[in-house]
Amino acid sequence: MQEQKIKYTALLVALTFFMENLDATIIVTALPAMADTFRVDPINLNIGLTVYLVAVAVFIPVSGWLAERHGARRIFVTAIILFVLASILCALSQTKTVFTFARALQGIGGAMMVPVGRLVAMRLAPKEHLVKVIAYITWPGLIAPVIAPALGGLIVTQLSWQWIFYINVPLGLFAIWASLKLLDNEKTEDLAPFDWIGFTLLAFACASVVYGMERIGQEIGNAVSYLGLVIFGIMLFTIAVLYMRRSDAPLLKFDAFKQKTFSASIFGGSVARIAMSALPFLLPLMFQEAFGLSALQAGLLILAIFLGNLLMKPFTTTLMQRFGFRKILWVNAIIGACSIAACAWFTLDTPHWFMMVCMFLSGLSRSLQFTCYNSLSFADVLPQDKRHATTQFSLFFQISLAMGIAFAALILRGFMFVFEHQTPTLSDFHWTFIAIALFSLLSLIDTWRLSPDAGDEVSGYGAQSAKN
Image (cartoon, rainbow, N blue to C red; front, side):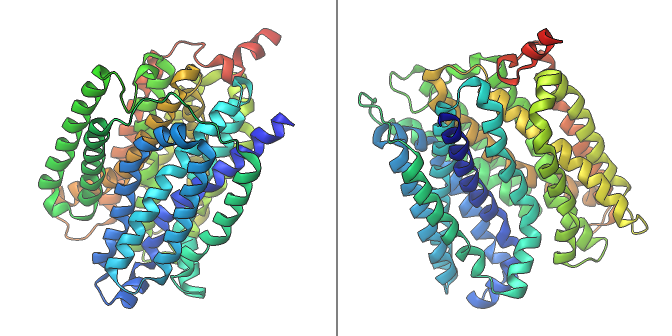
């Protein structure tokens, strides 16, 4: 009975993770249609992407404290309700101002949903079930950015852009019903007062980094000023960490970073996520700009990545038990880098089946690496540190995904500048893929520092070796 509850709770969190990640990217293909409704230029609607990402990053740090204070179920359900109501408001919007406000509310709801849900699942699952729970939670987040271009194009073509947001209503209502059935409303009675100073510093830091990185990807001509904003955000983040380490009642504690498995999953994992999140951004762009495909055709082509993500899932646990975290992260990082670099050999004459095979292999590697890092992150975290560790993991996860798109756009623009191209050519994309592949190998530094038996209690590798 308890095992079933763990599984269903993980699937519930996975559903909300899917909703949050899908809404972060699906509106890209709908921007022209939405611009017609609002009577503005499509590029002016990029604010809808930006404000969502900023709201998520700003409010993630407060989610753990609210869950402890008012109960995880109450905050989780409230977050879903806010997300659904904001989705309806997005669909009903007739002006850019109302739409921007609705997207901010949606981001706040998203910021509360996933970290609180992940915290509930982590507390519920014993170590021997952690890999399965993480796998359930992770793969929808992998799938959402990949299927978003095709799904968004299909919805806009067959229905209208409003249905991009209306689809959240039945999903959200089901999630609310499941939450009330499954979750307990546990809370901490002797919780310290809210750390307003820590929250303010962290909020401005996260907003500066995410907004700056997102705008670099959109406005390369102003890259220097936005890069300054990113550096300012990093400085604020450093000040926030120093303040909270000395505070008696900090918003976040950083004790989990003493565990090598957690720090490796944060730093090495962020490098991997930045590199891997660049592909769903670059490939549709290359297929449209350099290959002349439509947005829908490009979106359908990269569904090969989604297929790889999906088909790897049943084998992840077995691979972890067979080889352990360290070996998998080592070998798979190299495989992942090679699959990214392979995109540099795509030309107009390359058969579609060959490109889909390469993207399929990239999807396999992407899924395995994401699941390994996500499982490893909580392998050695102590029970009293789980709330803070979950919040920190969600925060770095969100920032790394935003940085992936901006980083890819920055490198692409850099090669365009070097080769004096006004619009991106096939060679610009090729060099960008090679650069990102090389960057992804930096994750090996943190993997090398792990002990051979890192996370064995979670992966089951030690027990499997003993049997053999």
